[in-house]
Image (cartoon, rainbow, N blue to C red; front, side, top):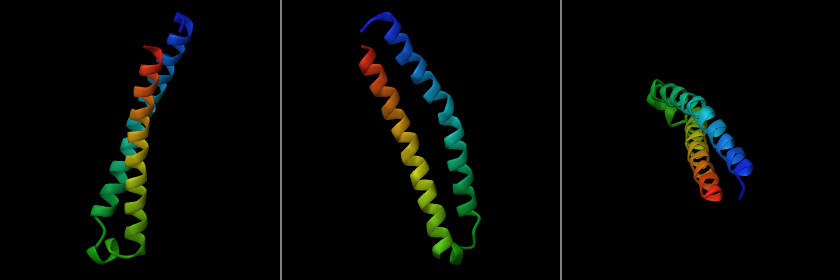
Length: 76
């Protein structure tokens, strides 16, 4: 791989790293929302939906980590 493509991959990895904190912040906000719900609501449909959102955001962050790792491997 040439220098130009390696730089492009590094730039993409930096862009991914730049959006990661925003997703983590949303995940924390959703988790706080869930934690502050009454227990009965947490166990209900609304609580389950919020938990699903928290889980999906966590999976998204993990996917971003995998993407950055993959870009690094491609550039090696």
